[in-house]
Length: 229
Length: 224
Image (cartoon, rainbow over all chains, first blue to last red; front, side):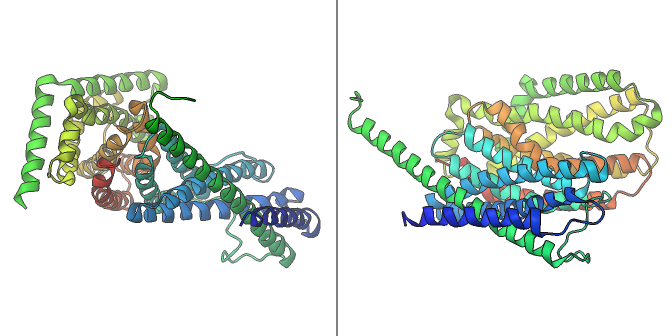
C-alpha cells in the first residue's frame, strides 16, 4: 500500500505529460477560433472532474449521516476541497476563453451562473467546516452537503429560463467533433481525474494522520493533566 | 398526535409573547428595511417605469437582510440559561421545536412585509399591471422558503464560532434559486407578465426543503 502511492504518482505524471502533448500538438487547430480553443481540453475535463467530486461528496455525506463512519466524513471533506479547486479552474479558464471568442469576460448564462452558484455552495461548506470546531462538525457539514446537493436541480431549473449563450455540450449536443479532438479531450479528462484522485488520496492520508495526532494529544492531556510537554 | 402539536403551540406562543413584550426583533427589522428603502432610493433615483423593473429585486433584498436579523435572534434566546440543552435532554420531539421556530419567524417576517409594503408603494410609486393577488402567493411562498432554511441554518450556525456572520454565509448560497424565483415572479407580475413557472418552482423548493429540514433537524440539534 505504501509503494502504491508513488507508483500511481509517476503514472499520473506520465499521463499528464501525454495529455499535454495531445492537447497542444496532436489535436487539430479549430477552424474559426484558432488556438484559443485548446483551453477546452483543460476547461471541460476540470468541469467533469469537479462535478464528479461534488457528487462523491454528496454520497459520502449521506453515508456519514446514516452510518457515522469517520472515513466517510474524511472522504466528503477531501472531495469538497478538490472539487472546489477544480471548479475554480473552470471558472478561471472559462473567461480566458470567452474574452477573445465572445468578446466578453462573463455573461449571466445558464451554465456559467449555475457553476458559479455551485462553487458558492461548496465554498460555504468549506467555511462551515473551518468555523465549527469540535465533534459536531462532521454532522453539520454532512447536513449542509445534503441540502447543497438538493439545491443543484433548483439552480439548473431556475437559471434555465435565461437564454443560454454557452456552446452546446459536445457529447449528445448534436454537434460533430474531430476524432483527434475527442481523443485529446478524453485523455485529458483521464489525466486530470487521476491527478485529482491522487491529491485526494494524499489529502486523505494527511487528514487521517492529523486526526490521529489530535486524538493522541487529547489522550495524553487526559492522562497527565499538568502537562509534561 | 396531540403532544407534538401541543409543544409546537406552547413554544410558538412563548416566543410570540416574548417578542410582543420586548419587540427586539421586529423593531430592528423594521428600522433596517426602512434604511434599505431610503438608501436604495437615493442611490438609484428611479422613475416609475424603472422602479417597476427593479422593485422585485429591491423589495426582496430588503426583506432578506431584515429576515437575517430576526433569524439570528431565534436561537440566541435559547442559549441563555441553557434552555436549548434542557430541550435536548427532554423527551420532546425536536421537529416540534423546529416547526414552532419556523412558524414564529414566518409570522414576524410577514408582519414586517405587511408594514413595509405600503412604504415601498409610496416611495417607489409602484402600481401593478398584472394581477396583484398573485403577489400574495409569491410573498407567502418566498417568505416560507427564507424562514424554513433560515431557521435550520441558524440552528446550525449556533454551533460555530462567530455565529452571527455564519448564518448569511450558509443561507444565501442555498437560497439563490428561491431568491431568483421570488424576484423574477414579483417583477413579472408587476410588469403584467405570467409568473406561473416561478410560482411552481418556488412551491416545489418550499416542499423539498421543508421536508429535508424537518428530517435533518434532530440530527443537527443533537450533533455532538
